[in-house]
Image (cartoon, rainbow, N blue to C red; front, top):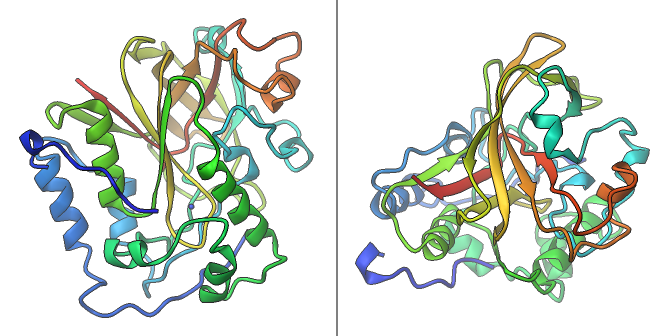
Amino acid sequence: MDSKFTVPLILLLSIVAAARVPLSSSDRSPFAAEAHWKTVLPDTAMPVVINELLHPSKEGRSTGNIIVDSGSNQNYQYVKLNFRREIPDATLFFLEDDLKRPGTRMHIQLTKRMSDSAVFLPQSEAKSIPFSTADLPNTLSRFSIQPKSKLALLMQQTLLQCEAPPLRSEVKHCATSLESIVDFTVNELGTNKGVQAMTTVLEDRTAAPENSPYKWYTVAGTAKEVSDAKTKTVNCHPVTYAYVSYYCHSLARTRTYVVPFVGDDGTKAEAMVVCHTDTSRWDPNHISFQMLRGVKPGTVPICHTLAEDTLVWMTS
């Protein structure tokens, strides 16, 4: 599922090993995606993590299957997988007041969810691969993924998430190329002027222990609100798939913060945090309500951190 958006003329307008897919030398060039970004968003700096998805650091370019934990599902109408069995003390969700208390400790993942070899497919190739549950068997075969593997199951869940109806006031799009992400974002924001692409920034990007990407962090200062509940934002989350894919959505009534954290290992971070002020349509059995005992849908804002390869878009 690649971009089907028509950019207004006035704007000129993601557990596994990497599955390697041969690409022609011309298609390996990231210049087309970079050129699209620069043309459509001439005043917007490209985040480091996005640049890395165009220029992977490791030798040998591959599709780089995305390593995304089961807690990354962003469809709040449905119950998440029982992620607590794998990491029982993970702080997947918390209250907005927790951000405003320096010293609050959280067990969170801020490092990127994708493998170091992950790379965007060229838009032409991404468009040639049907992105749907009906075509999943063909996709699994193409990327040599066992149909009954955990990855295959997670890929199916990604597709179901993408095909599910949006929440009330939500506009959603699953993007399989950088161009598709850019076009959806500009279409939703209604402008390409003054657009900011924000991500969590870690001072030390040394990989977390392989057995868990989660670390203990402490809120180390004042949370800065960068968008209120009336500001239109677009969030793009990496999802589990055979190649780099993002779940992008514009969801009303959210507040976005930049929060300073310090890890127990000394790692400093400026983390993006999103607080949902309207949870009235969330599934009552959603894991957030299991973790925040006593909290019911539609009562208080519920927040979560964003890993460094999640994009938050807004206008300045």
